[in-house]
Length: 395
Image 1 (cartoon, rainbow, N blue to C red):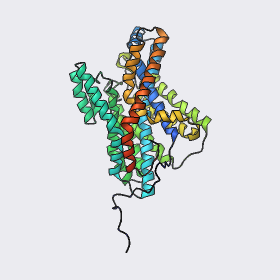
Image 2: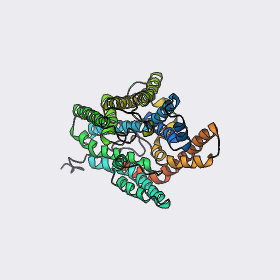
Image 3: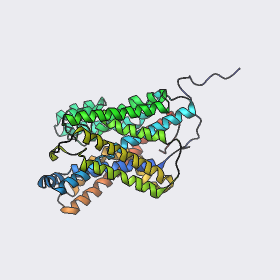
Image 4: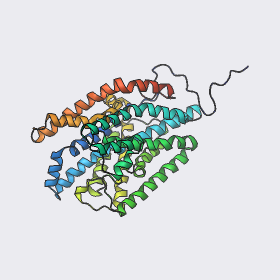
């Protein structure tokens, strides 16, 4: 008699993998993770400093003000890079799972995502609520209720974001909203169908941008926190994953030049098309400018991702890949690190203040993320591996 099946048609079996075996690990993607964080960190070095806003206000309307604000806002596009990278990696892994196992297990996908994101995410919310209660910012607690429901981005778009070190966790809501849809699409659609789905998403994003531009809404948080708008970045990552069927050849010099083009496009979008800038700039932006600006964000993300793929694994230092692996913790703790950096060098002058604040904050953030990764995230990551079909990165 034949042996009874070990799994149903709806739940493919996890292939036998030797303990510790890692297949398809790509340290260049961890390097992109850290780069995305570093751009966001630099952005927040500016915007969480009263000295920055004092200078910007004092030089209102000058070319220097516009350039400095554009440089600061360029850093914020690291968030778009996070989204594009997430979609690229998730799509690649789901397609590989379907190829090797014949089917995608959506249940195990959600278990993996929950074990990876929720422990640190909900810890961050607890810290944010504790901060709000300590400093009697009771209205901010209401915002974190929205965060708990994974619609924190909607709260930030409708109301002012909480003045809290955990405010930036609203971005996790958009990522979780993407996860609600994409594994089902990857399970049901072929590559052509997935490509059409991504293209449709880009069309919808641009329609929303035209509406926002026509209504002259705030370009800082209006489109920035909008799910449909940011889905354009996810769609970019999806299309890139569908294009790259196999590992590419290594061309480090070409890859670095292509990766460097991404921030240039982001800066152009911020300076010329005003796609992302604070309300105090007083710029009137129409729908076409927003659509072009966000298209440059997306193309820039594709350039960075494709560039690092061309750089290849062998050119990525181990320390850089290690920093990329703890990038979630870096993102969660970095505003606390900036507060610490500001407290340490608050009386310093000029360049000493900025350099000192940057270094102290970055070192403190890395230290917190390393501890968090070892003692908070790693236990859940080891559990997560039991639900993986492909061990694509070390713990």
